Every structure is written in C-alpha cells, then in structure tokens.
Amino acid sequence: MKVITRRQQQVFNYLRDNTDSFSCPPSLAELCVRLGMTSRGSLYKHIMALIEAGLIEPFAGNKQGGIRLTSQAGQEQLQPEQGLPFIGVIAAGKPIEALATVDYMTVPDALKTDKPCYVLQVKGDSMIEAGIFDGDWVVIEQRDCANNGDIVVALIDNAEATLKYLEQGAEQVLLLPANANMTALSYRPEQVVIQGVLVGQMRSYRVH
Amino acid sequence: MKVITRRQQQVFNYLRDNTDSFSCPPSLAELCVRLGMTSRGSLYKHIMALIEAGLIEPFAGNKQGGIRLTSQAGQEQLQPEQGLPFIGVIAAGKPIEALATVDYMTVPDALKTDKPCYVLQVKGDSMIEAGIFDGDWVVIEQRDCANNGDIVVALIDNAEATLKYLEQGAEQVLLLPANANMTALSYRPEQVVIQGVLVGQMRSYRVH
DNA sequence: TTGCCATGTTTTCTTTTTGTTCTCTTTTTT
DNA sequence: AAAAAAGAGAACAAAAAGAAAACATGGCAA
Image (cartoon, rainbow over all chains, first blue to last red):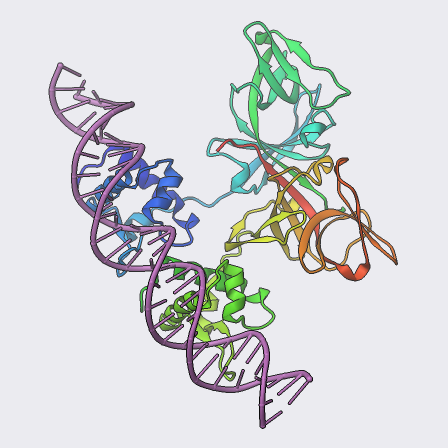
C-alpha cells in the first residue's frame, strides 16, 4: 500500500472523524474551509494521494460528486459519547466543592473543545457583567496556562478557587471580576495556578 | 438507483427534516421561499431528479398537489434522535432566518424540558442585561402561550420574530427588552403570536 | 359564464461551482 | 545546501445551479 505523508494522514483523520458532520459528500472548497486552507489545488493533491492509497474514494456516478470514505476505512468507529464530568460548584473565595459522586453532563460540541473539558456550576455574581450568572454551568478546558483576557479557573495559594478574567504580567497576576461592586485582586505569579479556561456557558430557565 | 447531485441532496434533506413544518404538502413557490430561491423552474429540476431517484413523490389526487416524501424515504430519519433541531437565527425585527439544512445540537437535559424544544441562535443585544448575548444559543420550548415574566419568542404581525420578556394584559401585550438603550413595545393581543418559551441558554467562548 | 390567479412545466440564457492542472513560493525534513 | 512536502493562486472546461420568461391548466370568485 502506498505511503502517506503526515499531512495526508491529518486530512484523512479529519475526514474519518467528521464524516457525519457533512449533510452530503463535501466538495474540495468545503473541505478547504474546514481545514483552514485557501487553495483547492493544494488539497486536491492530498485527496488524490488518499484515493491512491485506497483510504478514500470519489463519490461515484456524479461528475462533481465530492469525496467519501471507503467502506473499510469507515469501519473504525468512534466510541460512544459519554458527556463531560460535572465536577462541582465554584464559588469565589472557596475551594471547588466537589460532588461525592461524579455526574456526567451531555454538552453540545460547540461548547467544548477537543481537549479534556469538565463542567462546574457557578455560585455568586462575580462575573455577572460577562453574562455568567449565579447557578450557571460553565465548561472548562483543562489547562495550566492561558492568555490575557481569557476567563479562567484559578487556584490561589492552593486554597481557594475562583472564576475571573486573567491579566498576567511578569511581576503580578491580576484576577478581574466582571462586577462593578467587586475589586480586582493582584497576586504574585507563584500564588496563582491556572486550572482551566472557560470555553462554554449554559443556563437553565426551567422552573423546578 | 439514480445519482443525486449535492444540491439535490440538500433539497431532499430539507424536505426530510421539515415535513411536519408544513400544514399541507408545499408548492414549488413555497419551497422556493424556504430554500431562498427565486425561480420555480430551477427548483423544479431538483424536485424532478428526486422523484426519479425515488426519494420523493408528487402528491396524488390533485393536479396542483405539491410534493411529499415517499413512505420509505421518511423512515430513515426517525431512528437517530440525537439532539434538538437547530432552526436558525433570531434577530429582533426580522423573521427567523431558517437554515437551508437543519442540523441537530446535543443539549444537556438540564437545559430542555420534556416538551418539544428547538434551538435558535440570538443576533443582537436586546436581551443583554438578562445575560443573553449576541451569538448565544437559546433553547426554546415550543408553546403558544406563556406567563408574564417569561422570556418568549414572539411573532409580531406575522412578519417579525423577537426574543423578549412578556407582560400581557387584557388590552395590550408588552414585549420588554433587557437593554436600557431599547424601549418596550406595546401591541394589541391579536398582533402577537407566542412561538415558544425560553428554557435554556448557551454560549461558546471558543476561538475559531 | 368570464376573467384572474396560482399552479406545474418547459425553455433559454447567465452565473456559480466543480474538479483539474499548472506554475511559483514557502515551509519542513533530510 | 538539497530535497521533499505543502501551500497559494491563477486558469480552464465542464457541470450544476439559478434567473427569468413564457405557456398550459385547473380552481375560484365576481
């Protein structure tokens, strides 16, 4: 069987993992958008290589048919989706209050990333002006670093956890609430550990 | 079986996913509006291709009958009940902008009810003080009545849809934005049709 | 009845999208 | 430095999609 380059493997992996996100076999132009490319010609070379390797086949019977996986290539199916772990409650000024039994929450793909994520419930109003209310759920991508302006879960002095905007410099780390009634807090870098970055938020309006 | 082009597949998907949103089998002109086309003749070609492929059949017994799915074609959709239909975009002052192809969104149980629900994406800042921002998704329970204080999807004069707080009296219906820069609007009861009630809200912070 | 309008149907033309090939530059690997 | 891989972008022919107009027909109201 023909040898596949690294990039071609990436393209194939994308096809394999995202077949069902297409309503119909994708055209080269569509795939370019998905893969962040701007040239159909470049992608075409990869697709052709994958066809020659037998991993993919052109949509038969139609001149402008698009691309699909071969039957055998589609075999390797992805495991059943289980949802994200619901860890517990985060309230400014306390450690994260973990649940005794881990719950799982089904979360829309749009609210999570391909990295490991978990769900917390927010207690308090410290991020109210960012549209994050008391009782909301937030989806957190597990990470130990973040960019300025990100909303992060930060652990302070190994004791208290909080959800705040991050502004970090060389000398100090600022944790900014989104609430005019609260003040920003400044710490030395070694006091603050990033535990994750906000990637999604959810709220229920159901009456219980 | 005959081969279907990509566009024809899209048209079929739309039919398959929206059969029940038509009170009666739709005419070509109706379908044109839904699909954003202006020419019946163009759509006609697609419909004919779908009929030849056996995916669709003309409504019999009436010469000007419209189109409906074949029994077999309708079957295949019923199996995978994986999420809520993502209908389209709601922006204050315009009709709901429906997607050509409906896709489905997996939504946490906590954000939906046991009644039929659907998902819209919010455009604009009219509910910003209620923590509903531009680009957020909202989960709507399909209903034709609501209580005062509920956030509802309301159709005004059969023309424009909007997401607002509801305050209804005997003489007038008030639709209140949650934005100090906007004013409440007052209507006669017969001008306003409730299309659903907000039961959930979601936001993505992912950078794309 | 008559006339009108919405329907499906056909036809002609234009525009957009498609796969494909090519050349050239940039990036990565050896 | 050299080679391989990847990408951008332009060009092209063919296919598909669309617009617009015209036509036939049946339902319906004046």
